[in-house]
Amino acid sequence: MIILKSPEEIQAMRAAGRVVAQAHEVVRDLIRPGLTTLDLDRAVEEFLTKQNAIPAFKGYQGYPASICASVNEVVVHGIPSQDVVLQEGSIISVDIGAFVDGFCGDSAWTYPVGQIDSQTQLLLETTEKALFEGIEQARIGNRLSDISHAVQMRAEEQGFSVVRDFVGHGIGRQMHEAPQIPNFGPPGRGPRLKQGMTLAIEPMVNAGSYHVQILDDNWTVITRDNSWSAHFEHTIAISDEGPVVLTTL
Ligand code: MF3
Ligand code: CO
Image (cartoon, rainbow, N blue to C red; front, side):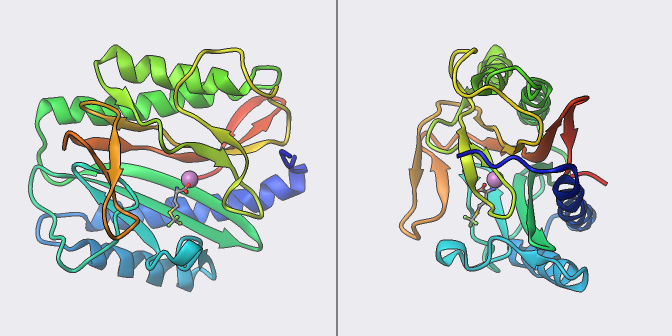
């Protein structure tokens, strides 16, 4: 069942979204060669706690940290570690979720570390565009897979591929609510979109093939072909005036 939110509930979700966006500002300002992904995790956890926000990932199905920090061929769910030192020319996807007053915000962004090559830059730009073209489809009367289709079209136009094994999701009082939101598929399928739906749309786009594998830590997801991968995610609400991004300042 898809839980529709009232305007008051969406206002509350905006507060959660804003804190997540601010945490991304903290990350963006910190990222540089030599920093570890554990440094980023600590900074975000400290920031969220100071804002009276609760990190949404920590303890979720046993996940040990407040952020996911996924470098290069890591697609999602990279566990922050003092052994992962950021290198010039790498990319890092940082995923942050937080609860404020009982509602969740969830957003991911892929950041360059120093200068990156032009093909990697294209991967980042394309995945960000795919996210926003998916968000554009989050309108009353459209169907859910209109979002999926728009994301896939943008990603594949550049020869990249969208991950099949992980999807976006409804979000609200729980981080994961119905519906699941694949990043691929034909348009015009699935439930009709309604006012008050709140969704986390999160394309994961690989430079190579879409196949992934999970490492022995049971979390880290990497590309099978070791190609690099980007991940952009926003939490949005569907209003009568169109999609509203909640994970923004
Ligand atoms: N954005 C991810 C998601 O939607 C983050 C979850 S990481 C986890 O599921 F550790 F909390 F599982
Ligand atoms: Co999510």
